Image (spheres, chains in turn yellow, purple):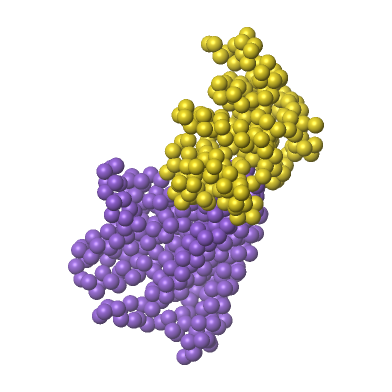
Length: 234
Length: 330
């Protein structure tokens, strides 16, 4: 059974229909990559899953439970974390406060905290600094760390490499591989090199519709399909 | 302008603005005794305005709600406290400090309780239906302010109501050779205590952490699993109670109140919130103290400009810092 299922999901923002028909299954474990051009509907798909925009009609099922129309907070408490495109960190709060806010009881599990330190050593260094003072890469690390400081089954990550230096992107890829051993990642990404190094299964969205589903291994070797769906050679 | 900002940061940042204003006023006023009296009056006034405005700042920061009806709680707080003090006139006139203190404590408690309940009612009935719609928020909350003024007229009448003060808060104390009203010192100390309590709540508790985070990014707090709408009701009630407490203190300060009190205070409260920076309690305190000091200094130095002093201060600060002195990080 899929961990997450989207069935004919449609989302309207104001008077604009952004998603027309998003149907896909995200299997348990590993990294599932959702690719697509700018404005194809990738971010809207993640936000609709989180309940930040309400899909109607269509359904979102998580672990077999229909979560369509649930409040965002209730969806999060079911075990879904969200790392938004703008990172969503609280700049006026310290690194520690940002992380403690993501814990259910307001205290850290020592093992999980050590794991965060191991994956993102910079966060330990800047533990008491206000988050606005961090670099772009460190802010992204904090955003991802917040998603793993508690056990989560599914982590939705929206374009984590945007604007990051190559060395930070490599470190991020390493961290995602480790995280995917314990949780499922639904990754929205435009950086195809980064995405293909991580993804096991994938889908392509275009104009609010899923236009391709398959394995990343098959997609990587099909240059014609890549050109047609993502215009990578353009 | 950037250079000015950097130089200011080196010497303690915008927190030192009230000190700078006080120093300039000291030079302009010339007479130290007058300066001390005006400064104490400005600080006391600032603290009372801070109480009235802090809730509004958080409410706007947390839920993007423009509540022009906020000062209705100031009015109700003033009238409820005045009524309680009127009923306890015997205690107020007594020589017993205990009875005096009990009377003022009961009056403030009644105002705070009224603020809590009215805040819950106001949020549920008036605010909730107009979330995410600023135009409707302005219209309906302005309407609510007018309705509340009419309720006060119906219950307490249109004649100005005198507010008795407890015996132990009457008179003056000498600071050096300058006499200062006891009530002003009381207002300053009480305001400071409330600010410290707010500061500790916001900075040392999980609820406070949620409020600060919610002011910055409400959506992300929800994505972390917290119902910000439920938190908002609590903040709205607390903000209303603080406004009512501010109104109760203001009533004792003015000793004569009218049903138009809320409408009169609304402008000052909004000026303070805008000067301080939306969503920031520290900014609201700074803005309130600036308004209090400037109003008193200008009232002494150039009485004809007194009415315009708040507006001029707001214009000057917004030209310098368009987001206010200490806005919440967004």
